[in-house]
Structures are given as C-alpha cells and as structure tokens.
Image 1 (cartoon, rainbow, N blue to C red):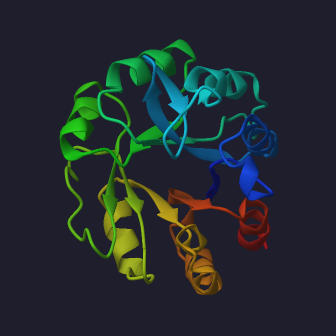
Image 2 (cartoon, rainbow, N blue to C red):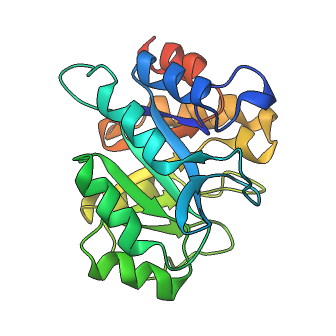
Length: 213
C-alpha cells in the first residue's frame, strides 16, 4: 500500500507544505498530498490564502523530477485543488515535467468536469456526508474520507476496487481523530486488496512500519 504524506513529511506543524517537508517525503519514497491555489497568475502551494512566500507548483515539480525513484517508480502526487479555473496551467505543468503518477481531487463538480474533459487523472470524493460520490463513472478513483467516524466497511472498499477505481483513504488523524487510527489501520492491514489502496497520513513513517510488519 502506498503511503502518501499529508502536506509533505513534516515533523513540526511549521514544516507543512514546505520544501523541507517535500524533500523529506520524496527522499523517503513517500507520495505527497498538497494544496494548489492561484496567486498573481501562477499556481502556488498553499492550504490557506497564499502570499508572496508561497512555494510555486513548478518548484515542487522540479523537486519531484529530480527526486530518486523507489523500486523504479516515482511516488504519487495527490493534488488538492483549492481554486477553480486552474485546469490549463495544471495540465501544462504536469506534462512539462512528465508526471505520470498523480491525481487531482476536491474541486467543485463543474471544475471537476474540466479536469476530466482535459484527460487528467481525477478522483471523486466519498464520506459519511457524501455517500454517492459525484461523477463516479467518469473519475479514475475515490478519495475516501471519514470526518466523524470510520463509516465504511471492507465491502465498500471492495466495491470500488472491483469497479476499477483507485482508492486513497484518509487516515483519521487528519481530522484530529487520533484515537481511531489504530482501529482503522488494523482493518486496512488485513484487507485482501491492500495493494490497490493508498493511505494519506500525517504519520508516514509509522504507517510504513505498521503495514510492513
């Protein structure tokens, strides 16, 4: 199961979405989840409103391009789209840096259609509040979230896998549900199609050790 480091592999809060956190994740072979917004006509990495100090998306892609391969593969970039209308620039930059392992997610439905129509790898979202993920047939995969509880069963995972969808599962600590991490991880470790999943987590090293045990 691929481990995706939420906002990079950070050790203290201030390192989230920084060059240091991205380099640390890539050097360790972890995927990266990060947030994209527009700022002064370009795309930058920022969860909140961006400013002049925000890292450009292109700077992240340059780091990614020169990072080491692991098992002859590059890790996945999970790109949380925070602003509408970025499709042309995102597409242009992904092609320029020849990024093959990525997906975009969390856009509005109209904006999602623009990514799908552009041929970009797009994930829909499912949670306890969104039981019927929009544009399911058109999307490549599912961002499987759980805000208040781990609401899904192995049957839900299997239904997506058997439909040919990739799955990225949100680990509970991303919603400050640290007490639920162990229960969810135990379920995922025993899942028979674990190789078809990825896990987005704030604890990438712990996850690698847990799932490789």
